Image (cartoon, rainbow, N blue to C red):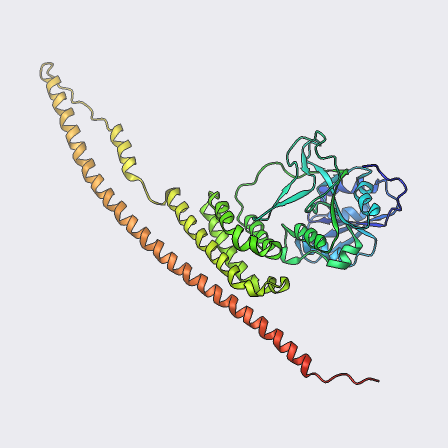
Length: 445
């Protein structure tokens, strides 16, 4: 694709969201001050940092406008503070851990400036080594709604050099045309504090007939760790909760009601930790409460029962899998195997006699007797342990049944409360309609 040179460059505000990122700002802000772009400003949105981020920025970059939030609002709420008062033609969102090149902004803005149907663009981002791709646009895998960065962790050999339309781009380096904000509004704060807010935003823009484009010539380094985190309950809960909320908002009904259940069960079966499955169960029940907020806006209110059935079934599957994981991960003791190991290590010391002729006979007798006595001792221990294991298994079965009964009661109550919420929403809607019909018409002047 030929690069256009006769472009009228639109005005830009770059919003840098910060929370205790003083050391990151030292590598983020200096390149921004040297950008090859005619008309732009930098706004630092500070999420109530308690380091010297704000003071350091004021001293070293006095032209940077600063918005100070009263709390750590996360990504969507924090960025929305700036986006709600945005006035220039393009808003650019940037993470503090992104280090840009001089032409980064021009190449990010170029597709929007050249084509009015392009509403959002995203950069090519490398990991810290400057060679490994971290982001080259992203696609959504249905029916699970999992986002995948194209060519993720691949060494860049030119495979990501083509500008193209994608499902979404990361908010770490994203440009948004002002008409998009005027048409669809800002980020949905239901996704706060983070995960899936930019995915939701891009799909809303596409539904409003704006293109989302990956801009490969806009290059930056995203100093995001390449190492995987261990299981972290809050992060896992937030990721999976927002994934399910995203599916409620965007998945086609047939995909959610028919394709999602088997795929979701297979997804859960791959989770190794019982704790993760217990978290999934809570998320499915939580999503049941969200149905009255989401489905009416999509015109899917008549299908609420089907959505409830799917979430109820998935919650039950999560409980069953969690109990199996707990059993498999050693909650029932295997003491017999331990005793067998101990038996193999038992050594009976031989009795040495002062009389050479009698000594070996006595020693052999003592060894034989010690072996018999040890066996008698272990037989009793085996019997006790087998009885203990039997009683423990019975207790586990009783506990299993009690938990299953409680879970069924909880799911039933959850469904009832969700249905009451739906009925309340419908009643409020009818009341508003009646009030509109009964209100006297305005008199013409």
